[in-house]
Length: 443
Image (tube, rainbow, N blue to C red):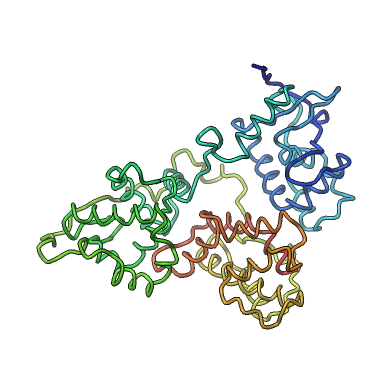
């Protein structure tokens, strides 16, 4: 088998790949940087900022092959662009990108590159392609990268700093961990959507039907534990096999109809199942609301993030809809540190209003009939409609619609669920991930 070697290489010797699968082949290094910043401008900024503050992640090293006196970057081109811009902000001068983005990139602290950049060298093209496929071509029956879904992301987040307002979500995760042990082996739990179960548990009427009660960060049995587990197990299996979809339980009315008409009668409780007093199932540790140990406090803190999601002059708002303009102005003034839920709600409203406004301004019909945000985003992202001409942007818009985590489902949960709230980190992460979409819709 071909070998790899770990090296420290001067940044000046790293050449970006002209054949990056992210876009069409580019003729020069400058053209690659320009293309990368044009397509992934805000993402490159966030990456550069993270590198500036924390350095490169040692578990995700840049992969290179020798090319004369240079090293061609096979994997890690975005990181390399971020590094090159950090090291030499003058690269931005003749690149046609947003002035606000240029200012943000130039404001970042330049890291110390004196010892070079840690890379992995591999000069076997077949082996390089194999390593890249492991990262970018899905789980491949367990050989490739196993992406985290909403369950894994929520579990990881709750293992560190607990997100305010998400106690109920964490309780549902803990309950799922108990129930899954009794689920049939032929049920594909890798396809289970925890957000669907959390949506059910956000409804007090549904909790009553399922024989559970939530109070003060604790989940209780109110009825026979064996029957409660059987009921939750049934829901888990229905969700995992895609028989119980979000479209069946989207709002309170749908959940009522589901439990009245489709939920099996054999799982319903009678008076003999009721407990004399509630029994504790799981609880959230009192210490979980505290910051994780070792987090710097007081004067030793790093510079804080901005209280707001963005500055108004970062985005040019050309919307014609008075509501879109007002929502944009309100969002630019909201402090996400104080009002993450309000920010999340305004983001949801702004996305829908600005999407429909964009369709009208593009002359695609003043009487757009799509009443759902999903329909509006579908219409915009479809190349045949001529609104989005950038393939990558179209894919990003589609990710909002289809993503199980950080997508339309999260927005709707934050907007419509009585018990699911957005944390500051969640609101920031959603905005940062889809910043370019909002910028496009408002342009």
